[in-house]
Length: 457
Image 1 (cartoon, one colour):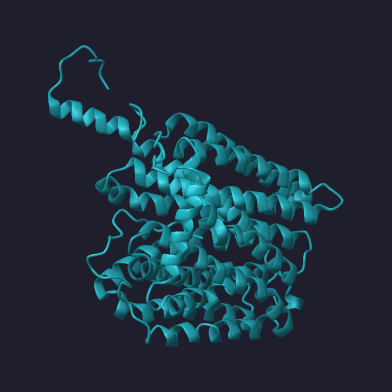
Image 2 (spheres, rainbow, N blue to C red):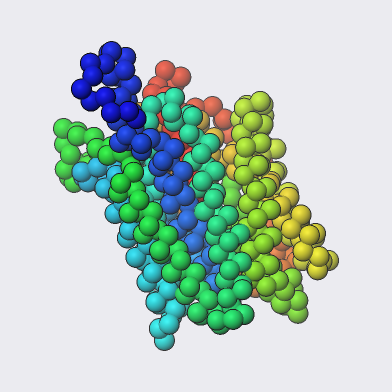
């Protein structure tokens, strides 16, 4: 920007400069921080959700134990709505974001150290739990900063960037770090290999935190009339009561929990199946090969499916689209039954099958996001109620993730993947009987500016 501090500028120019300053310091406009902010949101999430399970598999932990421990760790995203209002006590959303990026980086570094302790499993689970709590808290402040710092037009303009760079965390985790881990396992040994991976994750998060200390807009927290812990607790109670008093809310909660019944189990056991030896019913792929098939073509297919699912639902409307979306999430899981039955060795065939599964996952996942946004969340506390809905969605994910290891151990891989398909039937049936319209009157507070949280979670 040219140096014109002493010039008298027209009112329109002054307003434009003020808008730019609100979005960030000169030269630190949204393109300088939105992509890196959502990459920082995705990276620790996928470290907990995906990398940890593959690391435990390499270190000889049983499938059922992996499912249990990773489910416990993932519970942080279930309960984050309960402490999210208290983040308003911080001086700014930027302060919360930077703090928890640095804290998350430190905890990832502690995971690397924990792997060398005699009680490495308990220690690494504890440290990953801290990573999860830090990441879940960061998610809240991250989305709040995005909404508070950008106009509605800018929010729409950069919405595609948020999903893309969040999923860049998946690509880097599976397509980069897992492949690297596979190579390092051959030369450095399993423990040292994963130590290096978590040190890389730690260094990346700390670097992002330092960068964002410079680049992020301030986005001060709202100053309400009762901005105290007690006042926030009273508001939280009111928000919860209002949520539970919505018409038909218990049926909606059941639908949200059941939506991911099949997908949660496949996302947990699928990568372990790929790694397990042929004599145990798995495909016997190396760590690097899993990274190649899941982290490259699989991630691209997921992103393409997510975009296509959004356009598909916009075209048909949620009521007509919901059953095809549920089928899209679950029918591609047939590829795992195929893989567990025929055990192909060609990595191209395996990659194509998993790409089909990931495309369906991305395509259909749009359904539950829009159901929570358009049916459950609207009302007096739209943003808070959307956050509670995402917590309930994560609860369903955690519950089915927790039991998936035990079911697989009891049934074996082939029959387990048949069970996964059966687990999708209840939500498909329920979708044909529950309302797909907002639970409040049309003149209630709209969900303007609302953006689905990552995914991802």
